[in-house]
Amino acid sequence: MFTGIIEEIGSIKQIIRGNEAIILEIEAKKILEDVKLGDSIAVNGVCLTVTTFSHHRFTVDVMPETVRATSLQALQAGSNVNLERAMIANGRFGGHFVSGHVDGTGIIQDKKRVANAVYYTISVQENLSRYLMLKGSVTVDGTSLTIFGVSDNTFTISLIPHTLNETILGGKGKGDTVNIEVDMLAKYMDHLLKQEDRGTSNKHGMSASFLEEHGFK
Image 1 (tube, rainbow, N blue to C red):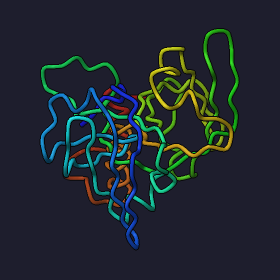
Image 2: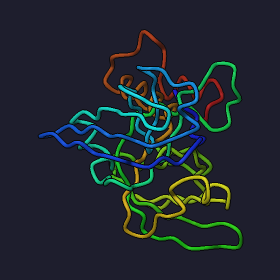
Image 3: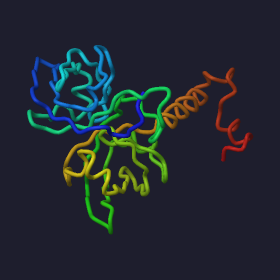
């Protein structure tokens, strides 16, 4: 589990490509202070497992499904990546619930500066747009952000100077691909309601009418 608060920008030092899978060797500093074999680290929002590490580098395996479903396939030696360690139980929760299981990719359609912020408009696949709502949460390349505009299959986010400087999003522009993870709670609720529509969850009492009766309108 992650929070979407990026801890460090790392750098890809080497990519070993197989037929479908890849191995990433990443240079970092802060996140390696307490690293152990088997730890989970989010790389551009993708939860990956540490397989080897040294004082300044670590490696992760990326399986074929993850390569196909995320933007990690476009990484090259020298690419910068957002890094976050899995959250600890006694830490502050600064972002939102992030699983590190990317739902798909988006394309930056527009980027413009407004006062001290930069607005990004990002398009996503139609199957993800149902989870996007005004003031809702979304994870873009592992960064927890708030949606302040939704239209058809696009959403708009606003980045403050700190986020622009401390994540790789500041260096991205129109046409770039980003990893998208929609709100986890919205996905679970959608799944429960779909079960009700199929008549498979009546015994649990979870339905649209149940929610409305209990004040969720």
